[in-house]
Length: 248
Image 1 (cartoon, rainbow, N blue to C red):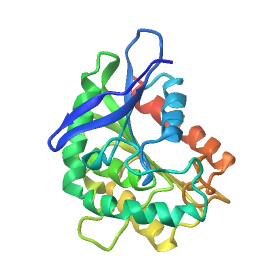
Image 2 (cartoon, one colour):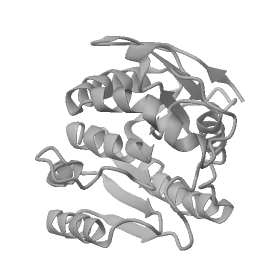
Image 3 (cartoon, helix red, strand yellow):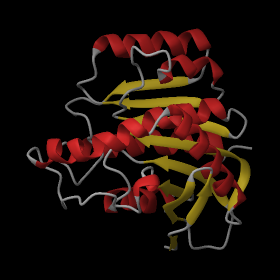
Image 4 (tube, one colour):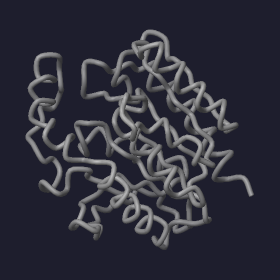
């Protein structure tokens, strides 16, 4: 399967990224895939390759490019319970610096790059995200309601906060179909708040708690990994992409 490691000009510099796409010379629907808090690394590349194998042109950007190329900090091969708080402590300054304003500037650049690729067809794309990437996907879809036909988030983080810029406040601006695959540890009040917001907006949407999972269940390089959760994620994501991107 062809892969590329492009460098994408943005308003704030140049972002490194990973791209995977089918090896058939045809044009395919584009998917912007936002990583979790640990960033662009081999497990995200594996997800991109798997998705590309189903007929999609997948772009995974380094969200922390302002601080260096991925991996911005040294990551263990497996992020276990002992390593997790240490890694997150080192990443916290980068997470705090990744403001909504930066997210939107980057989204403009990432979508412009993706839709201009000769291997990308149609005028519709999907945006998906894992952990904090789910919030970025929602912000991107709200800011680009025209081209974004589907948005999906898995074990989402920070989609409902107490702040005025909480991503759930952007739901009325969405036109995309929404799917959220939730870990079994999401606070019930956050789930109810997001559900009420989606219902009020009248969007096509689905959310589902994946039983027996914890936050991070799709990431095979962490202790949170659940093979059953990852499988269910594919069982929900692929039909979403098919009906929103492959239907005339």
